[in-house]
Length: 459
Image (cartoon, rainbow, N blue to C red; front, side, top):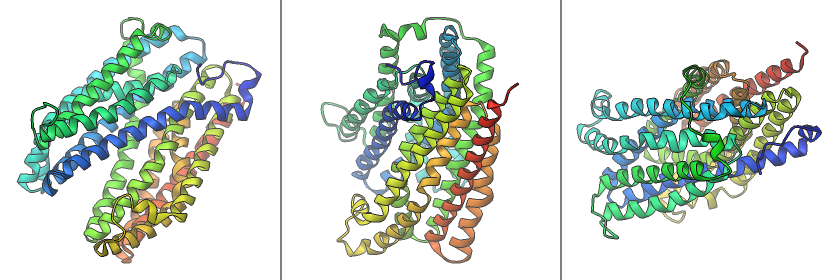
């Protein structure tokens, strides 16, 4: 049954909003965690080939992920337009939006393919060693063939399926993808299971094949399931819809880029402080990223539900759905914060050996960083859910500016001042994280409160 409640008096029940939001967000959160598990598998498999393979493969995978994630931001507009059409009883428009979205994904995949084809000269221009740049480029030349599968299987489907009440399809395919990726990674790197031994590039091919299998599986499930086929009946793409999708989505892509570059710059500054500091920074950041997957899913669910009620002409229900999602995001992150404070050593022990004296400094610093992370968990949850709520109002340009101001106008300068100028190291950088995330969260929630209240006013 769809997690979007049909119209009626129960649409205004806060408890109902909470149940429907959790039901929609749960498979999305597991899908996000599955994608992270694939990345961890790639790293672990490459680690068996040595430090150089791990460094080159990790950098190449990060580049590929960052590029496709930015482009997926454009496709997030699908969930807004589809949910709005469903809420306004214009469900006949959904197939046209879907096919237009596929065309947009195809165009964006050409962009991703082109960027991943010219990695080597870019890295050399940035001062990277020629041997590393060449290895990264070879990996990316394989990975670029996954661009269409990524933008269709992850970009389109992750936006479209929740909007039609079929998010659970993502769940099962994503979980299966983790095991397929692990099997192919091991087999293609080491020549096991009758597969060719490709070494370093075997990981890139394994990821590419897994993404194609996942994308094709989702397409087959969507187009062959009797209960879903009416959403994707064959209709020609509509070019005005393409323009609408792009207009809503491009600021979201820029917002993603602003956030990614914020954390990338902070990681570069952590690298200035030594290998032990960088290791502690990466461990704490990875732990915080895992917790972040849940409010990220709640933001996607809020995007769908708020857009649906706006389309249904019920702005009060849309406002309630948004604030309930914000409360759920803050509540979950409060639990995550308590976990980081109460059992930091046990969590860090999943990454490094606690009994190794060589790791003592890294572990001690990572514990301190997790304490800071615990303080900003709640605002981190609020800012990402708030962004999802605002997208439902097709309000993406102002949130883009708010995010840029919070991260680059407050967060990065504070982190640089405390961490580098004042000599507080990684702790100073993480206080910059806290300042940036808190400011973005405050601005997002104020923006949502204002824009949702305006919808309640009579015309």
